[in-house]
Image 1 (spheres, helix red, strand yellow):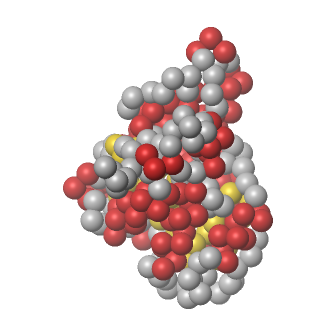
Image 2 (cartoon, rainbow, N blue to C red):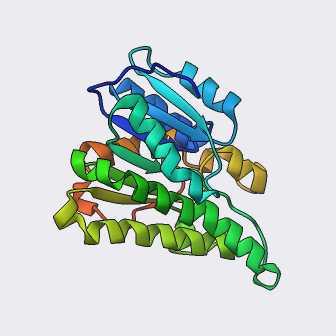
Length: 245
């Protein structure tokens, strides 16, 4: 762990998958907007690299963790609460995308994917719930187009992301009492290390993919209140619309 240990009046976000891709881009944008960031991920060196790129006025805390270990989530939330004195947002961005046809999808694959993509994020929100209610906070779940239109050979991934969509709706079912806002983003292909671990540029050219920054901007708009007209609903984000004709 690293970061300034002083309590703060600035708003604080817990960001999963903050070592690269969408999570890193989101942390950079939030820090620029005056937020402090708790950066969660599997690799400390990548989290430290993200922290170095944040605006100098933003405090950060890096926590190496495995979202598949849901039992770690309450301790992580307590660490962030003790460090910053508050939690205002949970941004569930991290995920795994194992590739297997249905015939090869066994219980082990299903459980490990659900643990990473659904159980861990859900328990993270549950552990932070008292803080989120106190601050009238926000949850943004980065799901996938696969929860709407499943991809070939990604059964476990699609099922886990469908569950994440339901987490958003479940939060909104309690919003009248809690005041917590929740959003789902459903991007298609995003130019991240995860995408390139699955397909090369010949199969899916870089210029067609969404950029991590485009998704991060959408996350920031959700947090700011500019997307409250689609609160609780899935929001498909398809390929990059900015490529030249």
